[in-house]
Length: 140
Ligand code: SF4
Ligand code: FES
Image (cartoon, rainbow, N blue to C red):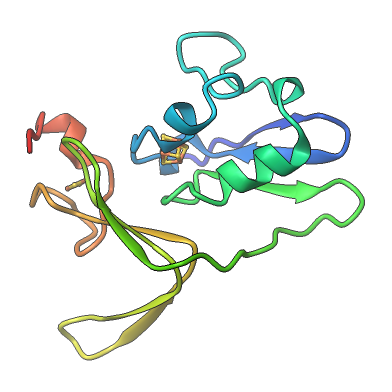
C-alpha cells in the first residue's frame, strides 16, 4: 500500500498524520475533539489547542499514525507514562507505558508510549491490532 503522509502545523510544531497506519482507536478525537474531528475538513485543526495539549494527545496515539516534531528541532520525543491497561470498546487492548513484549518465537520487542493488542482475533499483525476489528465489526 502506498504510504500517505499529511502534515498540519501551528508554526511551533508540525503534526504528521499517516492514515494507512491508523487503527481507529478513536483516542485522538475522544481526547481532544476540538483539534481532531474526522467529520470535518481538515480533520486536524492544530490552532484550536496549545502545542503542549497537542503533544500530550499525540503521545497517546497507539499506532504511530499521529506523530509530531517541533519545527525548530525536527525530532519526535518519547514520553514516559505510567503502565495502564485499558479495554477500548469494540477495539484493541491499549497498554500505556513502556513494556517488553515477548513473542512466541522468543524475540522481545520494546514498546513505548501506547501499545494496542488485538482482542478481536482478526489482526494480520498479531499480537498487535491493525485496525481489522472495524472490518469484521467486532463487538466486545
Ligand atoms: S490510531 Fe491514532 S490517529 Fe488513529 S484514531 Fe487512534 S489515536 Fe487517532
Ligand atoms: S482488535 Fe484491532 S485488529 Fe483485532
